Length: 299
Image 1 (tube, one colour):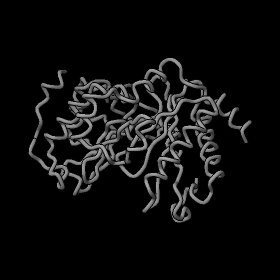
Image 2 (cartoon, rainbow, N blue to C red):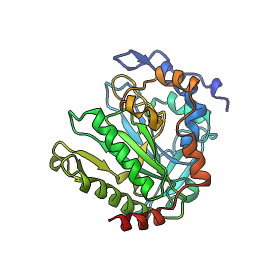
Image 3 (cartoon, rainbow, N blue to C red):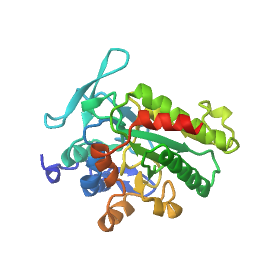
Image 4 (cartoon, one colour):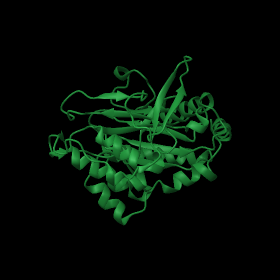
């Protein structure tokens, strides 16, 4: 299917009232970023966040995709931990991305593993979730500390402005370890960081016990958990987009500083900072088990 042949239904429908940003604007955005965005979606079970009446109304998360999708959209049956299964969309091409945008999918959330190795993550994700009032300079500092710790245990680190409140720090893995190794490893990484700065960082799951500390959220490293895909829009006023940045850019970046107008202009003059992450996940990513051993030696 040619993505340019997909006709936008109700193109004038306002999806972001504060812009206003219409459905046609959203579909156009995804057409423009598809070449760069699709490699970050390819092969990964997808959870869609859809808002057919715009972000001012109730949207929903959609995992199950066994109904109404055209035959050319890839659907895979994915086992759940309780013995059931979910039919997930796998967005392998620009046409699927544009089709889903036309279905009012604003946010694209992906697994940290692919359908070929569902229980062997190829990405480790640390989500920096700040409290109200946290300064962006502090968030940047924590992101760099996470990068440095990952480097100490032998893993490369990449950073993404989430389009929301914080940053993601992500490391490519070589798919040799299961979620049952990667999740405890991620938890110990977060605990190590928090122990070094307990007044500002926490791994406390209960929000009412975090106080004014930045939450180091590693729950996205469990089986069937998701994180916001690079270049996905966010269903928030301003139509911000999750955007990978170079570490050298981090000092100027804010979590929600890139939007659906700025991102295409950025990509027209700059290579995707996560292009190397995609290449690393295919060729030279690190071992979670070896990194786990190195972390134990640090502690």
